[in-house]
Image 1 (tube, rainbow, N blue to C red):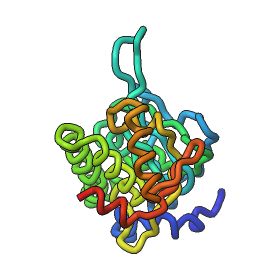
Image 2: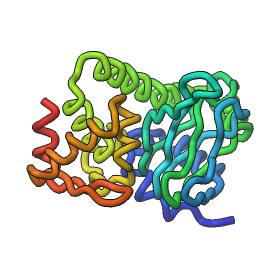
Image 3: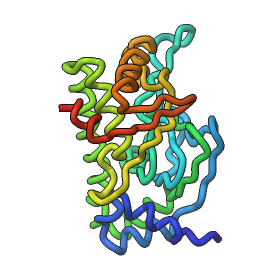
Image 4: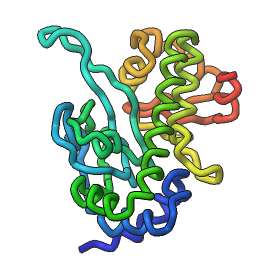
Length: 234
């Protein structure tokens, strides 16, 4: 069985895991199994059975769904997760099927805490259900903020905030955690995430490029001036 303790520096750079009681964080690491995915591989699909809790320790995972009728379905990209994100907790709570698809956006490594093992441990240690609920509450807060932004903010402001959120791990990193400056995301994916056309996204990014705030590369974006990008979010 592989020694997963080498992933502790990445895991501890995440606010949720770093604040867990020692008994719970150690149990998660002991139950975890290593998963590796190549670009495009499915981790799980919408309506699939619960398969546990995941921690992303390298790479990126696209969380998506579909909108429209089957014959005219369009992808709805919600978020691109980066380390040290934990996810999959909704199905742990209600035991229901997955609500969205999860695919690797690039070669990725994850720790999977199997569903049944996690439930058995929580049944024996029920005081730690609240710790898991904190993870879900964090995601719910972010979802409400995202819904508000889609309604009231301009496209340039939504895009700037989304880039800052990705660089900072959507608030999941500790205060001293490093930011991710190179984002594995295409212009089309950004357009899907903020609900505008690819042409509009391209125009906004070219403006940021002219200001030397970002560098546009094939299949990714590099943030050159994070403070300037943050300033645009005000």
